[in-house]
Structure formats: structure tokens, C-alpha cells
Image (cartoon, rainbow, N blue to C red; front, side, top):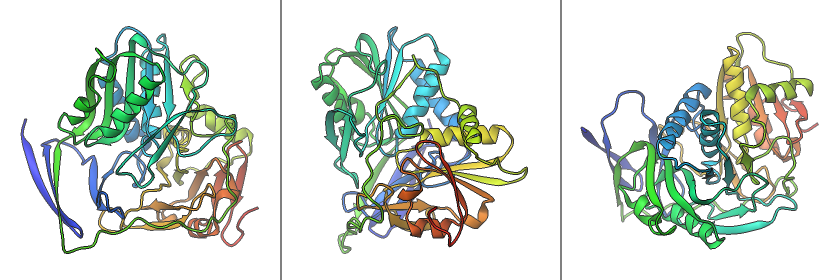
Length: 401
């Protein structure tokens, strides 16, 4: 396979990438971030976290990853896990594609989280050493979610892999709970580990074999500029809203207690039907629509965006994020604001120009009370869909209802 090497001169140093030569649009771009542990970021063009994405292109990559996983499944059940915040949605998407492809197989999906649902029992937690938010909480999964055993396959999904250390911590945490699996499949959008991720998890589940599935692989090296002081992480901010505790039984929420193939699948059309019953006025023909998810609340907004696109609307999808990235060629627009959850950290919306859109549908678990004035003023008129499906139309200068 032909390979290519590219060099990026960044503020904090020089990044060198070696990747296979491939046809089609790039799956990622390079940006610099405010993090002394790693000063650069691979910004996915199809994730929908920092760049608005066509839901159909997002689904196509999810299907590509799921097809790779299907080729490696053992005969038994499947347990899929995704990492907060970036891989909550792609983990759910891989699970969704798997259950559609093999509807008779028992499958479950569980995400790590930064937030504790009311009444949920913490199962265990891990740390991610290079992240801007290090603690991953894992809660005891709901009925029909957890599957394990010698004929079961564990599928762990993340946006990228470099050392495999976070994969290994999660696998070790599952083993410490008494779980076993006959096979482990590591799934990424970009795999920079050059085999190290597989090595990191090898032996955790004794005789389990390891496979990797990715949309893009390669290697990178980093030469820091020793004359430059690394940029520090952003400090805490004053909470603009009251602290929020998620309700585990909300209609619209991140799947912190899991999804099960034994339950009816919720489609994007199902979501639009609920919203229309709750008073959502559908866009007009020809409207350009931006669907926004908030933090970990990613999957249901993506499904809604997908359904709108399938109805013929020009639709893009993006989410707010905790990732502190610098403006540049990749991040041309950046809005900073206090978090939706009242915990006192900064959140960001990247590459969104409100005037480009006729309608903005903003899904948030916290409701309009979790949207600060800075965010509302910047976005203009938006339709807010909260955790129980209530629709609020917020207009410039009007603020919260």
C-alpha cells in the first residue's frame, strides 16, 4: 500500500503524519488545542463534533465500521461500549448498524459519562491521561444491555487510538467486575497506534483474541518547540446555571444506562413524530437546517437530523463540546460559553455561523434553563428540545421563556 508523509508546522511544534494514500475527501484535519499534554488534535470531518456534518456521510462511516466489526463477531452476544464525550455517538451508531444487520442477536450498548444520573449506581471509573476531562464514570447497565461470556464479543469504540491505554483501562475495569469475553474488537475513526492498541489490551481477558477496525490508520511523530511555553488548559468558569442532575428516565438523553437490542429501536422518524406531537413546527421547503446536540447528548439528535435529510431537507449535524481548540484553518469560528450542566467548565461550539441556517434545532438534556445567555445571544432564534421533549422557541433578546 502506498503511503504519504505530511508535515504540519504548528505553534507548539512540528507534527509529522504518515498515512496510506486514499481516494476521496479527507477524514480529518489538524488543529491546535489548549492542552499541555498534547498540543494538537485530529479533527474529524465526519464525526459532527467540531465541523457540521451531512448525516448521510456520518451514517456511511458508521456502517463502514460496523461492517468491519461484523466480520469479527463470535457466535454469541455482543457488548458495545463508547467513550465520553467524543465517541458516545459513534459508539451508539456502530451498535445501531450492528443490530440492524443482525436483529436476532442479543446486543447491548453502554457509554462512559462525565455525569451521574439520579439514582444510578456507579459501576466503576477510569481515567484518560491525555484528555481535558480525565474521569470516565461507568454506571451499572440497565436490563438487557450487558452480555458477556466465552462466546461473547466486546466492542470498544473511540474516535482515535494512539497508545491504547484508555482501551486497556476500560477492558481491565470490565474484567475487575467479573466479566469475560472470547473476543475484543477495537473500533476507531483514526488509529495511530501502529498495533500498540491491540498490544495494550492483549491478555486482559486471558485467551481472548483481538481485532481492530478503523476508517483511517497511520502514524505520527511530534517535535515540540522547546522555546515555547505549552498553552495551559482553560480554567474553571462561574456556572451560569444551577447544577443539573440527569434523570435516567428522560425521553431524550445520552444512553448512560445503556441501549438493548431487546428493546424497540427508536428511529429518527420516531423522534420527529414525538416532536411534532409536542408542537414542533417542521421546517419549510428549502430551509437549511442545523441540528445541534449538547455535550454527550448526541445520538438522538443525529437520528433526527438523519430523518430530516431523508425527507429532503438540507440538513447538517453538530454538537457542543468540552474540547478547547484554537482558531485556525480548521476551526474558523468558535463560541465559548459556560457549560450546560452548571458544573463550572467551559464548553464550545465550533464552525457554526448562525446566519447560514434558516432553522436551528437544539437538543439539550438540561432544557432551556441550561443554555446560557452567551449561547442564546449568539445563535439567534432556535428551537430547543429538552429532555422530556418540550419544545421552546427562543428568539434574540428574548432569552429564556
